[in-house]
Length: 115
Image (cartoon, rainbow, N blue to C red; front, top):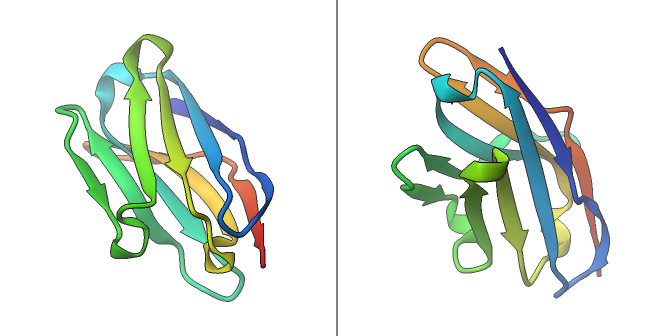
């Protein structure tokens, strides 16, 4: 199993920045990729960004050029740097660990962007 703990959410004005962190523990060596997802009220959860063991990153079109996913293997932590935030970025952000047969999710952290 993998345990994930997110942090770094909060309230920010449009144009501001936040950095989310996701600390992983447990069966870390079994993780193939890590991802950040978000879910706004009344909407489905959607992929924001992901990074695999080879360091390959993938971004949703709506965050390209504004968000950056990175990881610190020594700390077993994945980050999501969010710049130029927009009100439509308001959502609960979830960290996920993707293994070959399972996915594990964090509890989520609220990001609210005011206009």
